[in-house]
Image (cartoon, rainbow, N blue to C red; front, side):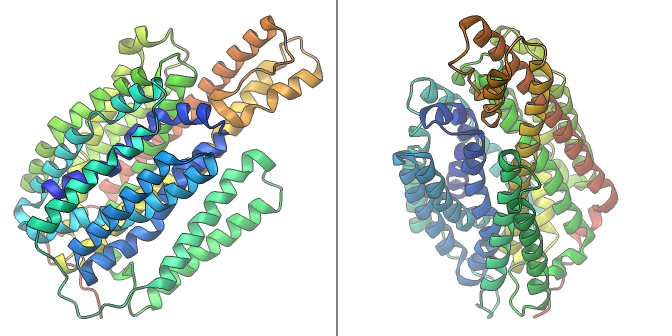
Length: 505
């Protein structure tokens, strides 16, 4: 439990702290809004595309061995990110982090699942969720403090000592765990198809704000991506050694839990990203204050997640997996109604209620959802099941960042164009103002304007970004509620305790 918590904490620290320091990275490296999305998606793409094979590798070659390998690669990637000299290198090293994470993350849950009895699994996963959150509780706060001081690079260096301690514990204290399966063949064609497919779809969506939908790059990228993702399904259907055995999805509870994951984490990922950007770039929070705003969410996870896991063990997960995502979606909707505020002094009457509701919903969802996914399959396929569910949560993040990121730029530019028409600027100046839309909330008024006009344009940038933020948060909230609907339709308490789904040789 200690080693899995510490290793998982690296990934959580990386995610929570990075959202908070993104504005500092954007300013320090002169990165565009698209660069920010690639910074997030380079990591998520590797997680999404390789996590399935990471889970399979653990099951086939040894969960402890692959877990340690993943941690070591993650440490190397983190160190390289901290030393990156420009945006391009940072994105490349985020890919390396993602490869390590894809080997590391499925191993934590499969080690827990394979070593703890089924009737205690929900409680164990709840404990893992709670303690992981305790370890990462300082992530956003520390990230904000370091970013404000100009030391955002140390967010990546934090992973190094945590990872080293986790490896030492695993090496000395944890026994190897291998699935009872003689088949050691890996599904490289499937891994290649899903990695290239996700990359092509993401690239297509990220190019829309820059070049428009009609440019040949966009339909070609999206079309190629969809073809490759379709090919992935066909490969998995025909393969004798699939990385994602489609027979697992015959269990409607397993399928429903993964659909819930897809919708909920798409909403959560987009919501947390745009909330972080809004707080710093439009609402006047510094990055430490932005990090502190997420504390209610984190504290609720600490105190409620383990309790929710115990309730799922006792009464079954269906009710919790219906109420939790619905409440989380409601929290995102509440946050969508917050417009321009006076700043941190108004936090408790503006953002605080929505963050509390969002945190409460997620706290009742995370442990029961993970326990449902792991409990619907045999221990033999625990690594694969964990890999599928974690991959889907990352795929959700990739698509949310790509699709909603593209929509945000379109919403932002549309609102800005409408408001800009009221300003007495010439066409050349208006075009210069509109050229900054790709920067989103970090847009700067053109230097050619006088001070009075610069101030007016800056206000327009902020109000247009807030308008785009509100629309994105409403979409995110609806995705959370759609996740709750998946629980109503598909999840059955009996299936979690039923005989595991047979997977043919």
